Length: 98
Image 1 (spheres, helix red, strand yellow):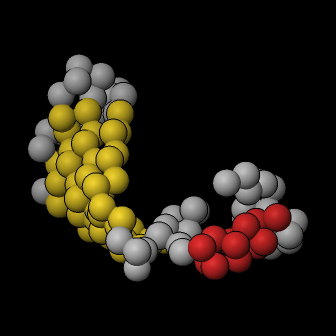
Image 2 (tube, rainbow, N blue to C red):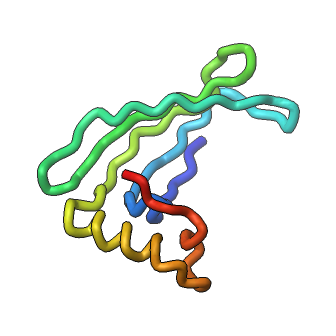
Image 3 (cartoon, one colour):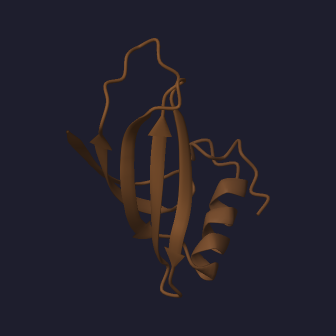
């Protein structure tokens, strides 16, 4: 069973992914995610893969992610936006330290 998601994250990285569920998950499960970025091109295009396991270390889900990370100029703009303390900016209470 798959579930497709495409949206920007809070960090400004835009990911597109399809979650592929291999085992059921219940409300009592604890899910762990291990993500590895496998490629970053100079254009900002990035790829990654993520494995989701339950408390018994059984894999319950996998996804291959593709997306675009912000480049230097875009990171500076994001830093400025976060640090402006604009009350309409949902990230304004978080200070950029990167």
